[in-house]
Image (cartoon, rainbow, N blue to C red; front, side, top):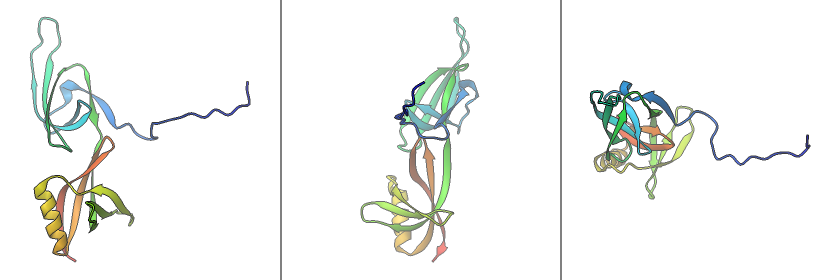
Length: 159
């Protein structure tokens, strides 16, 4: 055996996988699915009968949870699909910088400064107006597959 040390270049992060497998026939409306590498929320599922060669097929219509684009996929119901781990976390809004980034307060008391303002115009307007009025705002951040985005806003009263 050699006494040399081996160094491995690893691009994977330690911890849980970004997705988990689930049988296509068990995914329901309002569930999540990965279509074309994007995390999506299922808005419609239809299942076709088994054909001459066996497999019943599931037709998924889903909306990307970050870009709101509509995506479709057809998968045999007995096959596995990737389902993203989707987390929703609430943070208190501290500040909005000129370059479009927000400063958020975590439950542990630390600040989170790596999130941009949402692209949704009505939500963006609500956040900016509420912040300008000096309200205490709590934003919901949705995270899946290494992406994060502000998806909702709650007003918890004046400061």
